Image (cartoon, rainbow, N blue to C red):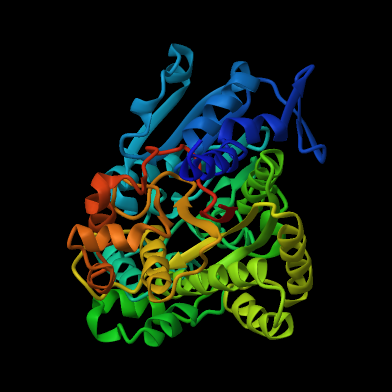
Length: 487
């Protein structure tokens, strides 16, 4: 088996562990007209269940919940990305109960997601005290639950988020602004669903799993400061580029007027996260003979910078695995690189021991990380954060070869199978790539500077180093795998 195929299977194990149907089946049990949720909540059901959902993973979540309690579901409305429904064979009984809307092409809210949200609002507003509302939430939910604040148009909101995204705003910042510009995010859906008992099943695509940030927290109390939206706009110096009505909305001193009692009917459950995927990847790599370590599930920052840091980590670990001297100096360098990758510095000693054991018995090493980076778009190319990270890694490792004794392969890919507005989930880099690129007349630095990572990997060896899986139906951010093989 090729080295790239081995890493491809590690990635697959990670994604399989966070398949929405599997996670819902773990979270919900049903017997004798009682639903049991994560062993914490029991609710009687009697044809009083309603389902709404928004996000990349919610169709699979809805299909599984329908298998469990379908006979008790009165109606469902779900908002999913364009093209997702065609990937499933949907049973007639499911289609009879659910209305499915597709929209948010390239994760941008559109008329499809706006129409879906209006139906969700209408359905939720009419629920009664004895109704149960299941809210299915996953990554991509912010774009698929689109209800602009009063006096704002969808185009005005889209322009704002697009400018922020291209400026490098992180997901916390983006969703704080979205909450200010929305009638339904930031806990307002919970207000609308009162008094029905509301159960949110949440698949996290945000670092640290803050429930008020995932899909902009529609069922969670908003604790953002009143002026946070305007502060974020000023941070990125976008005030003069935004529509006047957006600035006025963000400048509004009003905060959520929802007190804790407003949420007494709501139960939020986290059913899956990036760490779940990393742990599955670790288990698979261990089974295939690697010494394995999870670096961090909180890797964030500029994709280009994180790629550079992974390249430095690769070079450093290669030196530590093949040389027995200067370990103290290497530990100091490891501490700096670990900090830049958001790895707990206390973990460095453990990593050093793992490297030493790999060196002593010539065992292969697999380092696994996760999180979500951003891209500040300066060029006119086509790409995504994972491909940009791998291209940056390639540029940095081309400066100085990592090792003559080891083969080193790096993968970064989105668990949703979609990296930016491209057909790829991510990309691989190995030590022969720079020479291959030169032979084809491709300059990696030029493509990196133009934010054109997709076209670089598409041209290199006819796309051999692209990871193309198609949409996975789940989303828990990104997976990074760095493997060291003894030659």
